[in-house]
Amino acid sequence: MVPFHTKKRYMRAKLIFNPSSGIDSASPVQLMDVIKEMQAWKLIPEVCLVGSSSCCDLKEVVQDAIAQGIQMFVVCGGDGTISSVASTLVGTNATLGIIPTGTQNNVALSLGIPKNIPAAIAILRKGRRIKIDVGMVVCNENKTAFIEICSVGLFSSLFPSSDEIQHGNLARVGDFLATLISSPPAEIHLLLDNKKEINKQGHVVLVSNMPYTGSNFQLGSEDSYKDGLLDVLFFADLSKIDLLGYVFKGGGIASEEDPRIQHFRVLRVDIETKPAMPVMADGVALGEGPVSIEVLRSSLAVMVGSQEPKVLYEPKMSKKLGEIVEK
Image (spheres, helix red, strand yellow):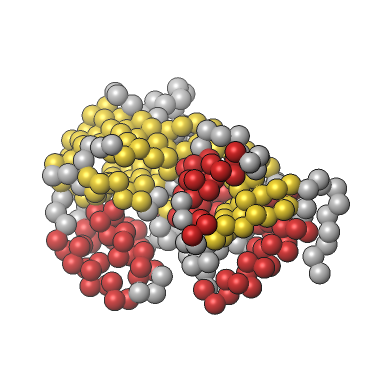
């Protein structure tokens, strides 16, 4: 029996539930457990099922809920659903709550939110409301916010097949290998904070706002979501096999970083490639072509745990915020 918490006033919350995350057969039971647990904390959930006719446009759903006075948006799902809701909440007074039920749960891991559903729901009432940074990417006429990562190049091409493989569709292994073999390198031009230019051949540029991405692979410091900077990793002079080995060996910056990987921390980065390479932000394809990415400081409110996460890695910081720092 869930204890009834009497010290809090009742609060309306928009519960955005993705039934396709986690184990499908458990979704109906899981939804009822989430609703009961939220009610025990005096949260009144208004449910929206991702993929249903009533929740086909998440942006419209969020905007309508804000217009009705709802200020708490709770996402029960994976990183993709969280990012879709978060990008709409950027710049508003609303608060994002997270109940991680996805495959990787990088956003929850980065913010110190546990996978345990009751513990994650307790944070909605007992945790801290903080403001975190987000990235803003512009590619051609596409402009969108992202909270986890923006990728340019090979990883963007591989994402559709690799994502399905991670969800159990092994039939896409052939597509993954075909893309890996056929993707050529490009001449990549980086402009960092309108100061430093880099021109080299390579396959991938990653621009990260959160510490973790992929299979919980660490790209930035533990507090990178609130340091006012973006982590830029330029994989120059690495073969495709080396790239995959780097990612799948695990660890990331927590282990010794390959000296061929250039790592910068910036406010803004402009990227142009020849030939044009695909661009993706938090799993959403934005097309090909030149891309500009900048950090929007403290622009999204999120509920996190009551204690600061331990800092396992602290990169060298410049004295002047926004100055380019190369490892």
